[in-house]
Every structure is written in C-alpha cells, then in structure tokens.
Length: 140
Image (cartoon, rainbow, N blue to C red; front, side, top):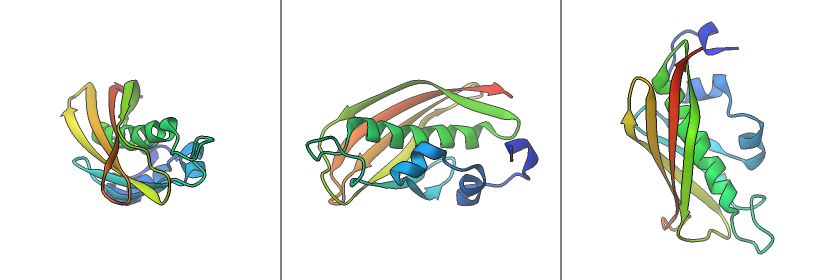
C-alpha cells in the first residue's frame, strides 16, 4: 500500500500501515508515540551490540533515522516523500542491557526540508546518544 492509497491517518495507525522496514523490524524497534511534534520508540540492547557487549553505535543511528524519517514523512503529507540527506550522532554513554528509548522532536519543519533531534536514553534515563537528521521533502 502506498501513502496515496490510504485515507489521511495519523499516529501509530499511520506507522502500522506504512511499516518500519525490515531493518527496524530485525532490530526490535517499536514505536510507542507518534505525532508530528513528538515520536517515541524503544529498542532492545540485546541483539544489537558490538562484540564487547555495548549497544552498537550504528544501532543508535538506525533508531534515530527510523524516528526522524518517519516523522518527516508524516509532516510531508500525502503525495510527498521525505528522504534523508544528512545524519550525525554523538554517543555520550554506552547501554549494555535492557532497552533504550528514543524521543524525536522537530527542530525545523519546512515545506522542503525538516530537521529532527533524537535523544536516546538508557533504562535509567541517562542520555546515551544524540542523533540529528535532515530530510528533503519532494513530490512523489
């Protein structure tokens, strides 16, 4: 199903219909809140670690991109597509067990570009990584 086939919907139902993609599914990413202004998702540490047992830095980035890109596409609306053009992450702590929670908020929501910040925290609420993603919005 494409966005054009669906009636306008929002929130977690929109995410459910669109799907997160095979990589996000494999990593165990689950959205718990989803609006244009705030998206929240969780991801288990187990299964997404480096050989030394730390959550892989790339896993933080996949989680951040999953949130930021989905939020940008919700903002873009029907008939438009948001595609990532830049992403960066600063890792400040390592998660070793449990799950991490990511909170995505917009920095800029324009007609042709969005910028989102995603803060990823461990079970104790300590910030582990800060991801920033820029998406270009274009017509399909």
